[in-house]
Length: 237
Ligand SMILES: [Zn+2]
Ligand SMILES: [Zn+2]
View 1: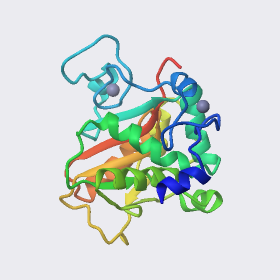
View 2: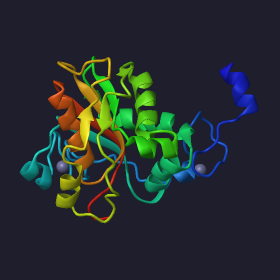
View 3: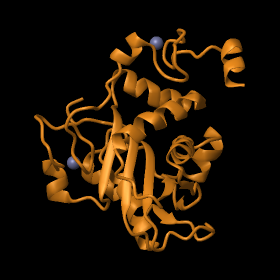
């Protein structure tokens, strides 16, 4: 079936539409121009760090401020093609990006996800969800849960109020805006109590949204939270 489909719809590069050999991915030139994270990154916020290390390293800001999750990773830097892929997934109805994106995200997680973890996407506010028709984080959540053989719980969290755009806001303002904005959805039928959680989002900027979501999981009794995002906004970009 797959072979027959491939004859009718040969796999194409997600970015340029050129034919590619493998199913769902990027062609050689687009791959080379995409800022995949591969080197040393902060073990909590996935920010790239200079140098090499055999052990997990934590960046200065995570060391100072702390993070309410145990481990975090990102597949791409949020710039150039990395930014383009996120925007295509988020606003361009390009659901086909979710599956290869999940493969890249899973690669960076490097087995750091507990076997029984529930996959929980960061929620959109209902109004934004209705306008956009889909939650890009849930698309990533579905793909990642299939890939890792984990249960996806798309309605575990709820955005209690619509938060204004965080664009252009500094770190403290972002955290203040998000505080208490996300809660565990009381209607969710898969209890988080005592469970490990793999929290999924498309982009991490300051980490304020992921902090609010992590804290909501913890308040609902979740044990350990691990974070996976498609793209990380690096401080110097
Ligand atoms: Zn291409
Ligand atoms: Zn960090």
